[in-house]
Image (tube, one colour):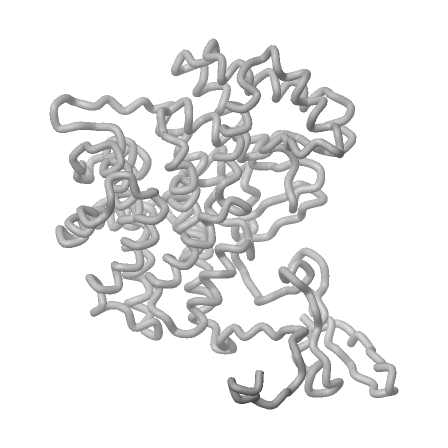
Length: 430
């Protein structure tokens, strides 16, 4: 919907009318698409922090109210009543499925989890200590070499095949990366298990003995996948959209998103939480480190507190906090020094006036790192876990972007600060 235009008059007196567009919810945006043509200037917004890069029907965030919605459904309701597979269907298709639709979708995902044996052989080329995110990005990128017969981005059937394939096979790839790291044989997927149960058995089972799946652990992983499924136009999602806008095959676009997520400023926050807890050491040091965190001149920072987008509270943290305590109790980890430290730090952050006033509440990364550690998932796999949940959001955004009839290749502009035009000087005269 377009509102009354925003009137802009340049210093030279040139007048432009910039359309003001309004979405279903959220702030209005000023359409500056004709600004250069009419005024001869570009907008300047480093990091695109105040720029709407696209139209989207998928996810809405209101940071002031602590609101996160997938396709209009509050994440709290989905976390309580839904599953990751159902949320995946919702993100990919726009509506919640009927029982029959969900059963068909779930069956499709379950029966496409195996990898081509050539892809498993690909893992043998990596060093045993290669980072799982490096392997994840490389193997996902290699999928275009195995499934090149269904990569026509303009073919709706091919797009659906890709969406189902990436969702089904990514946990198998992630588990294989972990198994390579620890020197254990790859475990094949099982069609009788649901999405998170299957992932846990591929991650932790071995051929020598049966593996019993803990339902609390499986539900915790499922819940974390739901909470990480999408988060609007973040760095990795924007990367997927930008790479895909060139018409590149979708596997390369997802591989680009994985690489963007690997950055410590984006997907590495829960890993940083564990490193912080290790630095603090034990409960006796909390007072000292809280004081350091309050000292503006001290470089130490408490990781996993506050959020760039959510200004009052992170709705995902509210949901996962209860599950975090349930996991620790179920696995008998409450008395571990690391988890005692984390819970004590959580208690202080929720009550201390300094943290309350500055709204430095524990966020989803604080709790997810604790849960992953309690489940025995190594720190190197934390960002991989993030990628597994976010993969369906990336895919939904790629599908939305590539099917947009008004879509065009992404091409940001710049403010050039280099030297003006100059003439080449022969080397003997320099």
